[in-house]
Amino acid sequence: MTTVLVIVALLVGAYLVAVLESWTSTGRLSFASPLLAGLALVGRESLVPRKSDRIFFEVGPVLLLVSAVLAAAVLPLSPGLIITDLTTGALFVNAALAYVMVALLMAGWGPDGAYAMVGGFRFLGQLVGYSMPIVMAIVGVAMRAESLVTTQIVESQVTLPNAVYQPVGFMIFFVAAMAVCFLPPFDLPTAPGELAGGVMAEYTGWRLAVMRLARAVLVVTLAASVTVFYLGGWNGPVLPPWAWTAVKTLAVAAVMLVAGRYVPRLREEHLLAWYWKFAIPLALLNILYVGIVLIAGSSSSMSM
Amino acid sequence: MILQTVFIGLFGIAAIWFAVVVFRTHSMVRSALALLFSQAALGAMFLAMQAEFLGVLQIMMMATEMSIMAIFMVMFMMDPGGLGGMDMTHQKRGSQAAGVIGAFAALGVAFLAGWGSPAATVPGPQEQLRGLGLDLMERSMLIFETAGVTILAAMIAATAVALATRSATKQEGNDE
Image (tube, rainbow over all chains, first blue to last red; front, side, top):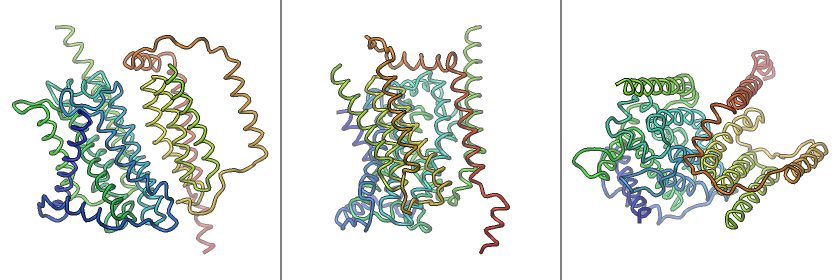
């Protein structure tokens, strides 16, 4: 039952993300467009390119969807509404999201097309950039909660959400999360206008529909993880817990989608340079900062 | 207990199978991904042995590690997409000998070492996490620090080797 509810929530979220995304690119708010576009894609022929690596070509989009759903499986939407409350939840999110890279590499390599392949390898480089800061930012969250269990991480933010407690970690995680779901300005693997769709270029018909759905679900998952790790999850006055999670997740997704409109696409080497020379040292400083605050907090409460 | 053994065996066979695939394919990307799945199968073995943290860590780290390995492959192979025909085997005589010796050594360790009886009870995941953390910060700290610094040094050295030197670039320019 919980699983069904979470998957329905993910689908509704993905639909709303698709509406928002089409609004950011066309300027028109059309609630029917994602459904119509999806129906049109399913109705069209799904071509398989000549001399494609068939296994990778077929597995790529499905693996993208599976990794996004698996990462969402350990994120609590409200007390009790979580598919599996793993002891290593915060680590598991990263483990599942690491396979986004594998899926995009497969989708890039599979169709035997130059644009797709460049897109796939670009995301590989992107992962080398974002994977360290995102894990280090989560370390700060786990330090405060003294646990990797996602529900305990939410409960640790009852008094003060992590976005206020460790703003540097929040910013690093937020930007890295945008890079994971390859939203602009980090849309290097798809890069419309430059790579003609990149990893999505050779996909047509229902396979493209699966890929687009997977990407929308991925955005929802990342927005939900920002909510759980930094915005206090279900905590909030008046509204029921699930509504708070929904509102926060959608707000984060909207900010992610809109922010990219005003920033030019980064180049691969600039992205890597920024992550390694700026974000990783900042993330390490954030760990140090959280450690100092925690020790200072515990010693002052002991002396009282 | 029987089900657990069956699953450990299945994942073990999957790990060996994918490891064989690494050398059977003629594509760089396929062989890199086969290696990843072989390592992920090892992670699944950890999960089957109720070592949750180690399993999840293995499955996560191997995806990242494989990507770094692929970047080094691209750097050294002069074949960015792996589009050219390639063979994963080389120096066949020597590697066959090394493989046979390695296999006997591994089997020798597996059968001759005193492993003791299987653990009767497994500590809970939370307990395991705590134990691992304490072990990393106490007994095993030096080992992990040494390994980490060694790997970092190797990566920097590999990058330095792959960088085009000024004289090499000049030569290329003259050839054209």
